[in-house]
Length: 153
Image (cartoon, rainbow, N blue to C red; front, side, top):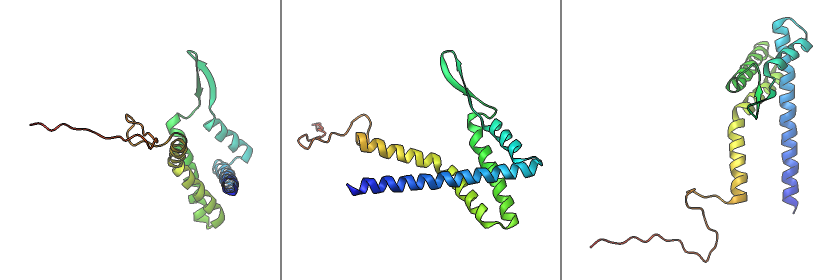
């Protein structure tokens, strides 16, 4: 029974590390945008918040969200901001902020793949995996599944 508790503890520590890394990267991006625009951090944070905000609304009985950026443009814009900030810190020779920004960029690039892999793993452990969706696997050892073909004379 010790392994699930250890796995949960490691997962919580990894999630806390990822959250801290992305929070610090956000702090660096707000500073980068504020220095680029010549404003304070507060105004730069408000501008970035307004740019990435998603507000809910109901249309034709369905809950939807609306924002300044379309759904498929949010990730590339965020990656471009992180990449610009990373280039700025690398050109100044600052290693630690560059490392945090690089880790954040790597996480954002791998997030879609990791989420799909974790969901597939969880679903296969709960419902069993099947190579052919039309023929679900049967785990009963008393059933023998064979294909019979007749030979033509």
